[in-house]
Image 1: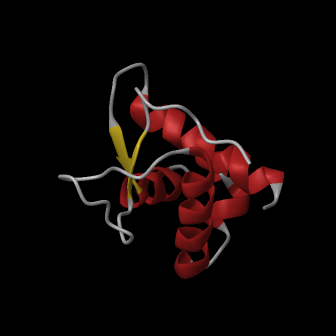
Image 2: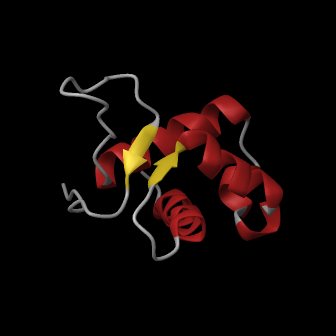
Image 3: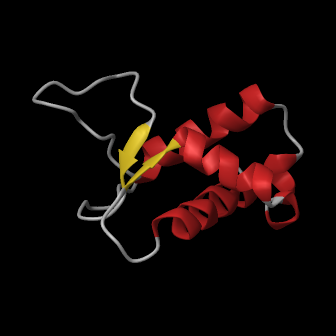
Length: 89
C-alpha cells in the first residue's frame, strides 16, 4: 500500500472521529474525501471503486471491524476506531 494512501485515509478518520469513542464507516471516509478533495489529492483523483477498495484495505490493516452481536460480519464496512488496539503487520 502506498504511504500517501494510508496517510490520507488515516487523516480522514481523524477528522471524522475526533477525540470521542466512535465507529467509522467507509461511506463516512469517502464523503469526507469528496467534500474536501484538495486535502486528499491522491484518493480524490481515483475512480470511486478504486477509492473504496483502498479505504477498505487500509482500514482492515489498522482497525478491527465492528462486530454486531457475537458473529463478525466479513462484509462490514464499519470499523471500531477508539477503544481498540491498532493492528500492525
